[in-house]
Length: 343
Ligand code: SF4
Image 1 (cartoon, rainbow, N blue to C red):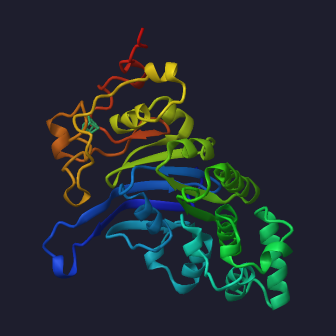
Image 2 (image 1 turned 90 degrees about the vertical axis):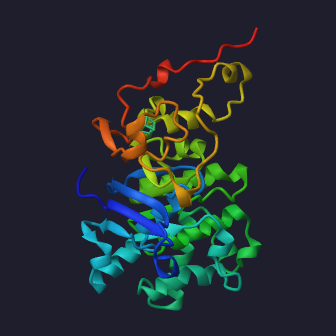
Image 3 (image 1 turned 135 degrees about the vertical axis):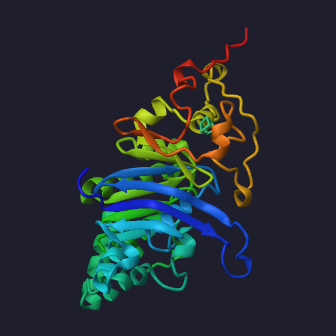
């Protein structure tokens, strides 16, 4: 990897520790996150609701200051940047939210939503130029002919079309990185692939780095097939590596459990699924998260060390990282017991 475009160094985010509740431990939403992203890379950031993936995305986009640690953009700490570098960074890293309706001003036309960033950042000098560039953006994201959409209001578009407009608005400032936070979870199922394909083509065409935040392994598998996957559990990054390699040989017991729980439509295959019986099915309260490895209250392989020490994210192969004290001694994925088909 050359110089990373985005780098997180020992990032921790704790909520509710200050002010009136200074004495409380607070909610540790992100714990010691370390991550590097190369230019043009796709990373799927996967985990259950409340695991800290959105908070990590907000750290990357500068919407959340880390409690400790650093967020670097092109090698510079964003919270120690001068005005010029900060402006480059704010243009270079954009976010696409899950709720496209909330992201667009309901009383402004699509033309207004797209031209505002162009005018504000001096990328269009006149109204006519802004309109021409807004039309180009709509063409890029597949809303054609653009004249049909420019003067519409958000409520006149479908959910999929609105999400395309939100992507177009992010593209307006020629970003290097887009953090897409559950961008298809509120889109009709039949349109999800189209949005994922659009993001993949923006990655290929413009070399934009994507961080795709999702709780859905299936869409992560589809979108990041040539990229990497990072899995989070209760604020900790627990497995990271090339998506194909990680899903073929998941090493962390949490990811193994997650994969055994993915529904399979074919009943014959479903009966032969691997099994990983957990100690508990309940997700611990994030405001009172377990010490050490946060998965130890559910992990069938836990030992005393797991309750005391946070396992570091370490390589088990050149590009495959796992945070588990016992990763070299627990049964590998292919040896997990397989349920036999019933007669
Ligand atoms: Fe399980 Fe211990 Fe590994 Fe955590 S560190 S996943 S508790 S074996």
